[in-house]
Length: 322
Length: 265
Image (cartoon, rainbow over all chains, first blue to last red; front, side):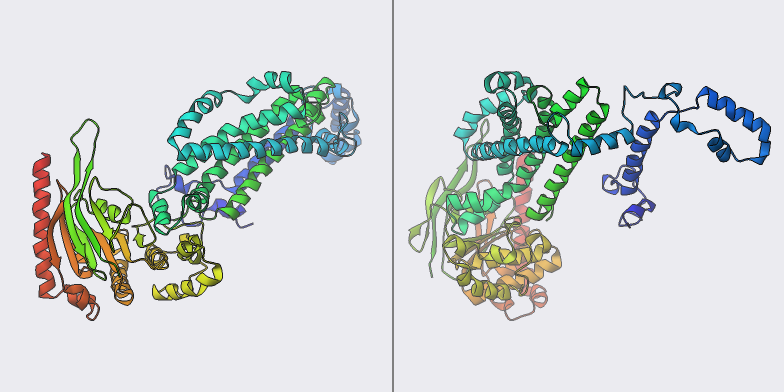
């Protein structure tokens, strides 16, 4: 709660007179994050809310206003005229029509239906889990292949030369560009999706592992040898833990890329999963289902990042200190 | 205890598209066990190169280095090294850092535990065993580095500007600690420093080194380290003998710097 009120200033930067341009004095105030979240929901609600009154209602209202004058409040008059909600949608003007955008209420209803009855043979949770499980498998193999290769590249000139060509050649290929080939080879659904995610994450993991090895201070390596460590011990006890911060950054980036790639891949190459759910909903004009899918994708993406940051704080507390 | 013997050591760096750099030229000396040797000189005089050769991190282009009759070719636990900073393992606690050497050589935790406790006490960090490295100040980190080095019970302790990153007050305290450890353990210590005062105060032998080519210019045997164990450091550093030596060495180094500047322009 105190964090919410930090918009009033305070903390170590409170007495700074030069803050414009001082990057350290700029941070994200939670209050304003909340304001923008509420703002987005309000805009969404307002944009999909029927505005204005139907014409016959307006006539009744004006007649009543003329007769009663100042003896009645506006609110009472509205109620007595039999307020708006029962009227036909077509009589309203609307910024975003029901064929363009689902309202928050409709989306909420859609969410509840998706939770219980589901859409396209699966409930919302099943779609989410199918997508998430694909990402988990893709990341697992991406890390499994990428980290040893990247570390080898950081440790041996011969292996660096050997792997440089494929890494530099394949890394710039957008994973989605290679999806048609994967569908051709492995069919739609899990087989091509998981392989695509390995392809999406493995280069990122190679680069980050290589960079992680590169960040180790020579004095640490020399100290370890001086203390009697063997080569495998230096690798396991010094180089690997020293590379953890870089590896974590790599995992976070790869996770974000994988998630985005997967949902796009599922639009064409899968019969289940969040991306495929959205795509099928489009065919039936189920805007509510599409919106629920989009929101769930966003929320899972944020949760994954929060989870990684939590892990990072637990596993590598020395990061950015000393 | 083992004697250190350096015979005609030379080190030449090949610089592409430029003249070769002679970092060390025909350096020879013998150092009996239990001495505290300080290496002093302007940058480029090869003092850190010499230390790295002694540690076994660099192979000299000519000459040999022997410790107790055994030629030095690679780093080993008989020669401990203390770096200026950043050589501690941040992912390990203070205790685990100190126990690193014995653990690499197969010691179990129950074996290292009492030794680590004793070392923590020796370097003045009793009760800090569970702390993380990044929770410690720079001076405390160097205390951990000293303890980690001592844990391996090396014959020689090599220090590469160990106090260079510390503030003046902490530095004086740490100088006292190094003298104390030297006396208590009786180990051979070789310490590289930029500070004339530090080199005089700590060294019972002192090499003033000169650049282009890197060599030993003067070899002093000094009384101050012995005195420093009994007398208050401030008092010692203010004594006429100390000041006289300091001025002598300072003017020597000034001359070298002037020559370098003249050479460069």
